Every structure is written in C-alpha cells, then in structure tokens.
Image (cartoon, rainbow, N blue to C red; front, side, top):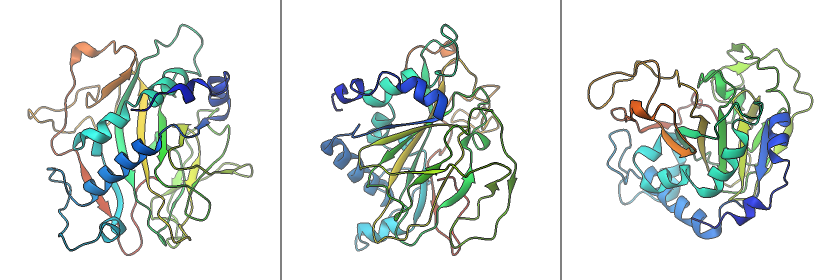
Length: 302
C-alpha cells in the first residue's frame, strides 16, 4: 500500500468540513501502482476468476470490455478477493476514516474505532443509467449517523460519464426522506427516489482516478447517465463506528448455520478498537453476488 503522507497533508479542518458538509474529497489517495492492481483485480472478479458461487465464469473468448459491460454491481467482493479486502483497510483510508466517522460527536464520545461492513464494485459502462436521489442510510440502517462511504474512483469521474452529485449539508438534520417509484428509466435505474427536499445547491463531484470521496450515510446524492464513451468504474466501501451495533441483514444465515442476532458480525475492524470483539466475526454463506444490467437497468444504489 502507498505511503499515506499525502493524506496527512490534507487541510487540518477536514473533520470539521466533513461534519458540516457531509462529504470530503481526498485527491490522489491511491497511487498509480495501487490503481493498476485494483483495476486488474476487479477485471478478474468480473470474469469470475475467484471461487465464489455468486460470480459467473466468463469464457476465454470474451474480452474484458464485454465482461464489464454486463455488470451493474458486484456486491461484497472483499469476501472473495484478498486484493479488495486489503483496499478496505488501506492505510490512507483508515487515516481519514479514523478522523471523520465520529466527527459529528463531541470529544470523548467516540473511541476512534471504525469497522467495514460492505464493498461494492460499479462498472457503469457507456450509455448506462445512474441512480436517482437517495441516502445510503435507507439501505444500511445504522441510525447513529456514523455510516460513511468511501467512493474510490478507478476512472476519472466527470459529469459526462456519470459522477456523483451531492447536496452539501443535507445530512445535518438526520432526516430520512420518503421514497417513491419513478418512470425515468432512461436516466436512472428503477430504484426508488428520495423526495421532499431542496436540492437547489447540488454540486457535481468530479474526481481524478485514485481520488476518494468520503460521504455521510444521510447525505443526499445521485448519479447521472453515462453519456460518454468511457467507463466510470468505482470501488465503494461502507464503514461505521465500532461502538455501534449493526442492525442489518440480521436474518442472514451464516456458514455455521446460525443467524445474526442483534448485531451483524460480518464486519472487520479498519482502525481503533471494537468493544464487541468478544462476540467474534462471522462470514455469511455465499456473500458475494453479481447484479447485471437488465433491459431497463436495475435497482441498486450508485
């Protein structure tokens, strides 16, 4: 992994900025070698190169481009790929996460611990839709405001190829806005859209490949259709405080045949201490799965 000296060079008020605005951009967090390693591994995943029942093997005659074109999202690749697993605990990510995940709390109310519960690989080929306004907290109910996404740009992300748009400060009220169906399936996938808020101050988040956008689980965001001739690939990891129980997928069956209790333990610690470590950590059966594009997209967060 890269030396994270560039992270230390970020503005000293990054935690305050994140707490107030709900997002933080860290440029060039991954170096070119790391980016190449991650890109190659995600192509391996797309081709079914890991032994995971949820991934489909691709014939040798199928090009990498063709293999990627079908992919809306690969969920939980870190359970199959040791490379992706390492990138969930990248030292640069850990350094930032260790400062911002609990930035909304008063000093002394957070121990600095961060755990990862999810990874997602998005390919977003040319011509494919984005997703309408939503909040990640609606899909991952942590409810303690510590949910944080680390959106790692594998390609340059621009308005033309479908970068994210965010509403700065929209996380502050802690409001989860209602969801409704929409009919704009040419622009957005069929996942329901959040509504009932003012998005007049939305901004595009353009990123160079290797840069990372961190954003709060309550922050309103969306992505547009890829109208360019280039991919907009991204690895997105989700994190939260180790001090909070994770009430998510609690009916999920584990490898040993048991089910999660009040706390989903399919997590791993990225930094700090886990006060619930005594409960152990468990991996669910067949956790990696692929979502492919259908005729009108698919209902998956961006």
